[in-house]
Amino acid sequence: MGKPDRIFFILVCFGLFLAHVSVASGIEGTHPYDAFERPQACASCHIDIARQHEQAMMSQSYTHIWDEIEYFELAVPHARKDPKVAEVEAGCNGCHAPLALMAGDVPPPRPSENSRANEGVSCDLCHTMTGFEGDTPFNFNWIVDPGKTKRGPREGLESPHHVTVMSEYHKTAEFCGACHNEKNPWNLFVKSTHLEWKEGPHGKAGIVCQSCHMPPAAGRSARMGSSLPDVRQHLFHGAHDPGKLAGVIEVRIHPETREAEPGDTIKLTAVCVNAKAGHKVPTGSVEDRALWLHVTATDAEGTVYHLPVDRKGFEGEEYTVASSSALGYQDIGEIKEIPDFKGLKRDGEIPDGDRIFRMAYLDPKGRITISQWYTASFGYDYRLAPLEARAETFTWNLPDEMPAGPVVVTAEIWYTRLVSSVAQFLKVPEEEWEPIRINSHATTFTILD
Ligand code: HEC
Ligand code: HEC
Ligand code: HEC
Ligand code: HEC
Ligand code: HEC
Image (cartoon, rainbow, N blue to C red; front, side, top):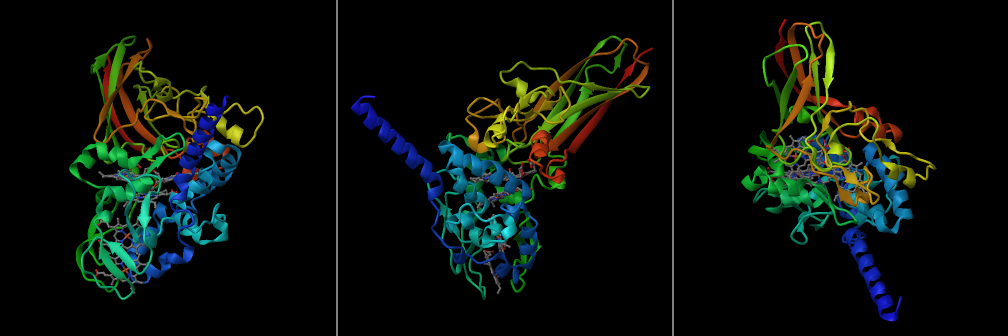
């Protein structure tokens, strides 16, 4: 390298260094733990809200077992080995253990040590936020002003414990977006729930996150507060709640003809609709989740046939059709320094030929990964956008010896929060990844004599 080149190189490195540091340094070391009140301090008056929040995932954002495994077994060792991802040792905590990052307590003590990191996304954090920096909310760029003043949706309230101030910010989707959009060291939005919402029909209609995740009900927000027609419920349930997932994707299936003969070819079409969510499904932790369409047919004698989906031929389609021979997640072997690690089954136990609604996260070597911080590119985005419907076809060559009588064809939608092969390898408890059936529909046609 010549001298000017060298200076340029040093400047570029310095720039990269600054860009790196800026992600986590915004709030690192800005407030001691003591600046924030504990959730228990709020619970004595805001009883129902406190009980609701306790059973929402955001109060467990640091203690939740799968988070602990991913942070301590993958992210931290990786950050210490690869300078490109060094920022995540601190950065993960910006959303999962924000009090710890602000206190400069990085990495925070393990959840079993019961430190204040365990409070996760707490009452006092959310209710002392005043806005966010810049024009796009992402990577915990919220601004917080801890103290006596608590910010909420209403004007002119009196509390014996604190000053209350009305905040428009708390009524916006951007309030949620500051943690529900995440940009990684490759400058990719690896979490974009708020951005998906913004470009979808709910965002355009002003139906904010709070409308669905904090719906209003009549009651009191504090024990001694006034009776109100519309107290915001702190439910925040999502993919950890089977009821919230139930029916999120609707499915209807029909045959091209109602009668066929053995040996004929019949085409079936299943239409899948994202009917309930205000963002894509899956959203958020897209790298972990899988959503798939499973179609079977049962003939008059009870024989069951599994029908593989017809390929559409788009680029990157291979990631959207389950294959038991495909491997992935080789980066886990590199992070854990396992010699000759060939990878894990890309699609876990998803039956061969089922359509998977996903967007693959690809590491810098182009292999599918669950490490969102180590994602350098994406596969085709085959997730379902809000209120979007998508048709999938199944072309079936009926066996020559098929018995006469009715054939029942069933389309099922299945969901898992974490691909089973990765979950089993990392010893994540089964309740975190057990596949659940979230919808189904059946149709019939008849085999003629
Ligand atoms: C001693 C009881 C008490 C404690 C403790 C308490 N609050 Fe309150 N808080 C109230 C009362 C009373 C109101 C007014 C409710 C009303 O009039 O409907 C209120 C109102 C609020 C509001 C405004 C609600 C709105 O509709 O705008 C927020 C936000 C809030 N509290 C947050 C907190 C947080 C966070 C904590 C813990 C750090 C906390 N409170 C602790 C009694 C309490
Ligand atoms: C029209 C109602 C609606 C709106 C608006 C909405 N959501 Fe959801 N959300 C849902 C439903 C239904 C689910 C369950 C499906 C799922 O988990 O993918 C869900 C799931 C989630 C999940 C869990 C996803 C996962 O895989 O763990 C998160 C996080 C979430 N929403 C955040 C948000 C945020 C942030 C906004 C605003 C930017 C928002 N939601 C707007 C209905 C909504
Ligand atoms: C993830 C951030 C978040 C957390 C955590 C959180 N809140 Fe809230 N809270 C909100 C938002 C946002 C609103 C206002 C929603 C709206 O009006 O659109 C709200 C509303 C309230 C209100 C006013 C309810 C009403 O409609 O009158 C009170 C009181 C309150 N929160 C107290 C608490 C307490 C106590 C806790 C902890 C047990 C808590 N919050 C945890 C975000 C949060
Ligand atoms: C300070 C950061 C932060 C803010 C602000 C925040 N969230 Fe979250 N949220 C998280 C984290 C971290 C998780 C993941 C929890 C875990 O580890 O499973 C989460 C999880 C969720 C889930 C998933 C629950 C499930 O069952 O999987 C929902 C729904 C959700 N948040 C809704 C909201 C909504 C709505 C808002 C705005 C009112 C909001 N969040 C604001 C950090 C935040
Ligand atoms: C910008 C905020 C943000 C950052 C930074 C962040 N997360 Fe998250 N994380 C979230 C939110 C929000 C969710 C919930 C997403 C959802 O459920 O859709 C989540 C979900 C998760 C989950 C899945 C939990 C589940 O519901 O199954 C794991 C594991 C996790 N994060 C680990 C990490 C690790 C490790 C890092 C650092 C490499 C990290 N996160 C960085 C916001 C963040």
